[in-house]
Length: 224
Image 1: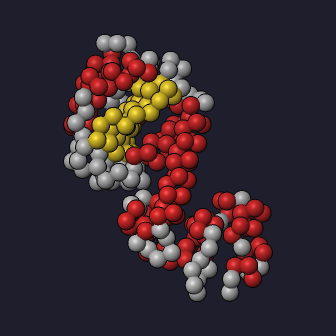
Image 2 (image 1 turned 90 degrees about the vertical axis):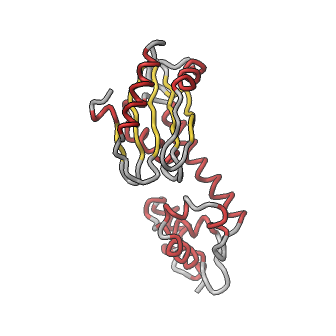
C-alpha cells in the first residue's frame, strides 16, 4: 500500500508537521529524506531495509561513498545530499556555540566535538580557539595520523593560536578504537602543549578525548 493511502496521522511528513521531528522513528525520518521508495517498497519500507543493512542510523551516516551507493535505492545524489545535511547540522551547532561561552554549555561542546571527530578511522587532533570570554573563534583539525596515533607539533599549535589571537584553547582528539581512556602519550603531549602556550599567555582549558559513546575530559580528571 502506498504511503498516500495510509491514515494521515501515520504518514511521516504529516506526522512530523503535527508532532515534531522527535516523534518520528529513525526509519520515518530517513523515509522523508529518501522521498520515494522503489518498486514494491514504500519509502518507509526502503528506509527500514537500509537501516537493517547498515546496522543502524549512525553507521549509515558514517558510511563512505562506495558503501552507501552500493545499496539498491541509494546513489551518488543521495550521498551528496546526506553529506550536505550532516555539514549543515555541524555548522548549526557551530553557530550556536559561537554565540555563547563554551564552558557554560559543556554538553553542546562535547556534542560538537563528537560529531566532528568520532567517525574518523584514524586519529585526528583538533583545537577550539577561544577569546578571553571563552567564545569560539574557530575550530581546526590540526594533525592527522594513523589508527595508532597522530604526531602533534607544539610549534604548529602555537602558530595557529597566535593567528586566531586566542586567549584560551580546548584540545580534542578521537580514539578510533572507541576506547576514550587517555594514554601516557596523550597526557605527555598535553603537558608539552600547555607549557608552550603558557609562554605566550594562552590557557589550556581542557583536552577532550572522543571515543565510541564515551569521552574523557582532562579538566574533570584534574590533569590540567
